[in-house]
Each structure stands twice: as C-alpha cells, then as structure tokens.
Image (cartoon, rainbow, N blue to C red; front, side, top):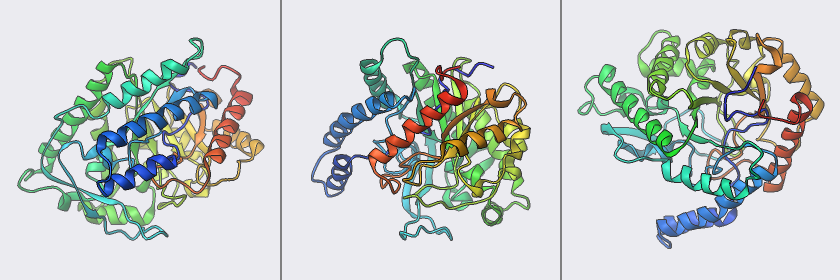
Length: 384
C-alpha cells in the first residue's frame, strides 16, 4: 500500500538536542540580557544547520527540531488567547531531577488572534529548499500539541468558571475553533503535514494515571475520557483539506531520558485506531513499558503506524537485528503487514529544552542507523 504523502519508512517525532548557543541565549533572555529578536536570530542559524543535518542523515520528514521551544506544548499553547502559564502541576510523577511540568490554565475565553506556527513553517521550507537535490521527496512537518493538552492535566479547576461556566459545549467548541484556525492558516501557507503530540492518551494506558484522571475529571470510567478526546481531536481536524495529512504521536513522558507512565495500549487501542480520524500514528514502543504489539490488531487497513521501537533515551545504538525482529513481530498484527509500518525512535531527542542524556553525535548516529535499517527492510525508496 502507498504511504500518505509526507510519511516515510524512516521517520521521526520532531525534536532534536538544542545546541549550546541556543541554551545560552535562552538563559540570557531570562535575565533580559538579549531580546527576543536576538534569540530568534540565533535560533534561525541553528535551525538552518539542523535542517541540513536531517537531510544529510537520510531523513525526509524535516522539522525545525523544536529549537524555538522550551517545552513541546507550553510554547505553542501560550500563544492562544485565554491561556496562561501558572506555576507547576502537582503530580506524583516528579522527575528524578525534581521537575514537574508547568501548569497551563485557561483564564479567559479561548481565541486564535494570530497564526502560531506559520512563520516557523515558512522558515523551515526556505531552508529545505536550499539543501534539496530536487529529486528526493522532502516534507516539512509541523508538530503542535494535541488539543487535549489544554484539558487533561488541569481539568475543571484549571479552566475559569467565569469564562466557561459550562465546559461542554462552550469550552470544547472554542478549543476546536482555535485548532481549526491554526490548521487552516498552516494549510494556506503550504503546510501539508501536521503532527499532534499527545501524552494524555498514552497516560490513559497507565493504571495509576487512569485512576487519577477519573478523579480529576469526575468520571467513573476513564474510558469516557478516551472517547471524549477522540471526538475532540476529530472535530479539531475535521475541516482539513484532503491533501493535508494528520499524524498523532503518543508518548509516556520524555524528560532528560526519564519516562513517567507505563502500560500497554490495550485500554485505548480500539478507540485510538477505530475512532480517531488521523492518517498516521507515531507510537512509543521502545521497551516493555509500552506493552506488546497485540493492540495493533485494531489497526484498520489503509492507516499507518510509525513504530517507535528505537530509543532516543539512550546513547547506545540499538541492535539492528533486534529492531528488524520487532518490526516483523509487529507486522504480524497489522492487516496489511509491513506495508502499514514505518520506523522511528519512540519520541524526540529533546521534548524539553534540556534534552535527553546523549551527545549530538550520538543522536545523529542513531538517526543514520534508523535510515539504514529502514532501507534494509523496505528498500532504498523510503517514500513508498
């Protein structure tokens, strides 16, 4: 079966380790030693480099490495009207570094006053054009947090009762509209691939987090949240043109090589695969925390799973033969076998500005190995 446009047999989730000049510039911005414009100029320089590095390593789905973000979700969501950052979440899942994620609150009516990712997309497109050979297919991918990120972690307590006395339908209607507006703006700018990053559907695979979520959201069965979020995402992407591909990435946490949740996909699998109207799933599958491949039995014909069986959390290279074996095992559960699978690492290399515990050279070595494996499994043309 043909791959959707912009999906490749060797793919990736989106983020890469931030170069030291970007880290230094962010620190200077915090102390007001430099301006936002100065930071952006430094980001531009290193995004140009990371685009070139992706292409040279054999990737064909190209991002800005999320170099303009400190957190994969916060930097985007703060651009929505009515959304603010207030302190940190109270969580039992504190990192070994003593960090908890920032808390997002909805303090007013949601709105989309300006396009959020369009200028960033245009910059990457320009850099891609500089390094493209004109023969190899290359796609600029835009990664944005899933709309569930505005609701799941804070719940009713984090959403203004003055702005939204009723969450359903008022809050969810407005949330859908802001996402539809952003996707429409991206399409108008030329973007044809958007990836939604969603930790929450993966957290709903964790027994402890399911119980916490049920209590926080006042539901008896956390499966109700899974179905609610599938409907929310479907509404948010419903207006996309037929030639725009939508992917979703599920992750159980990725902070300095640490994870936060565990549990196989079985609790969400049937809803995930049968009810969610996305084209491609980027699924974390790098170790036993993600369970076995049996949930893939729900995958409908015609949809793609980018199987994250390689690890961005470890510096050591994955074992090539083991990766091939796991791909073959997973294919046994897919109705169209290997044709429905692609390969990636389980998550990005730097979901937050701190990055995972490996060097940039180790990162690119892992990417090159991924491309090598994909060509051995599917052939030289990774776009089919």
